[in-house]
Amino acid sequence: MDFTKSKPEQLVFPKGFAFGAASAAHQIEGGTWNNNWSAFENFIRPDGASGIRTGETCGLAADHWSLFPSDVLLMQDLGLGIYRFSIEWSRIEPQEGRFDDGALITYRNWCKQLREAGIQPMVTLHHFSEPIWFSEKGGFEKKENIAFFEQFVRFVVPALSDFVDYWITINEPEVFSVMGWMLGEFPPGKTEPHTMAMVMENILLAHARAYHLIHELDKLDADGDGVACQVSIAKNILLFDPKSRWNPADRYLSNLMNRLYNEAILEALQSGVFQLSMPGQFDQKSYLPELANTLDFIGLNHYTRSLIRFNPFKQPPFTMHTDPRFETNDMGWEIWAQSFYDALMLVRTLNLPIWVTENGICDNETPDKRRVAFLGDSLYALQEAIRDGADVRGYIHWSVMDNFEWAHGFQPRFGLFRVDYTSQSRTLTEGGKLYKSVIEKQKNVSSTNFRADTV
Ligand code: BGC
Image (tube, rainbow, N blue to C red; front, side, top):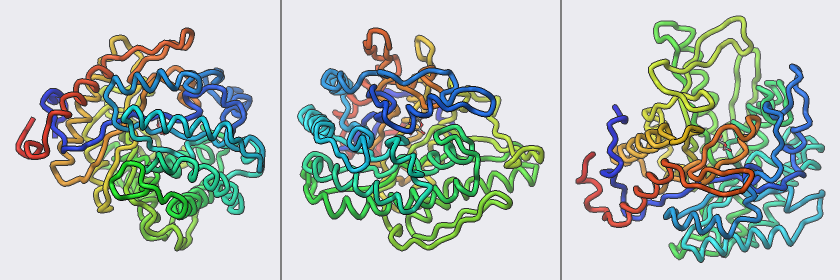
């Protein structure tokens, strides 16, 4: 389908469809100096580069910690119905076993302020960052360390349960483990495929434990829909295609990547059967009964698609490419809304409600023309996926404001609001203006004309 013919003013979504935006603690709060990511700023890579490739430090970031009240007003003005953010474990438990009530109260107040502004909070419990003391114990490399995460969950959930109904246990288990233990791009900067597979199993198990705990601890229905809590992970779906469809090796490898990165994880979350093997790299198999059926909905994070070319001189034996016909974002990722549609159709096979928990683009140009086009096309692809049967309940854009893009520092700008890091002022981008107008228009749309309207 050609999604570039989008006319955003004609988009129609089902009645009650939620529009939101997302963030993560370490990326915007500022002052998160006690976690694995701040430690990674001092990490020296084999090529001499710093853990943060630009040599930047996260520092005050967008100072969301202090500016939360005014940021909520901005979100309200944008028309957001839901805000996804994460709780910084290193604030809550700065030292092993020492829990900080003050930090918890701050997050509780955030949830309260959001509710008062008519914005539903969606809370992520682990978004790539964890306390230094936890990493020093081996983090999720060790199964026995999952118990520490459980303690954190036990402390946080009851304190927020009267405001929060939507919980994301773990953000992107596959990005966390592949980037940290296979590609060495995230802390701890390791390139050990077999450890990566172990971490993947452990973090999924951590999800499973948190899933059951949240159901035990959150019995309060905050939004009055009769359901006390809904729990999921945010699954990054990166789709792979062969660079040349005539090359059997490209085809084999792209199929294998789809299997390992996408399908194997989704299957494990439904059946409890975890199976991750790549010849010569890793081979991890187990049956984890507590992991079975631990999704109340599926959180989908989607950004791009990648083309795989077999390369026997690389380890693993392939390189990743984009299609030269398509534009790319500032991180070199292909912009092609069809892949968003395809990702939605893939998660649809789970037969669960779908929340798009992240989708966005980094565009540092002014005006941000690519963000405008990306948003229009992506929302069109989303509308069509819904029309074709995907049960999508809401779209949460990444990100509410510019932020610290992990190993790439502050250069990539994903925000609906552009942040001036000197003055800490926020300016609505052109993409943000488009989003605001789409949200505004949906308020007047009813579910009956949803199926009748066409773009
Ligand atoms: C992560 C975000 C990140 C975004 C853009 C997602 O994988 O959850 O934290 O900023 O992608 O790279």
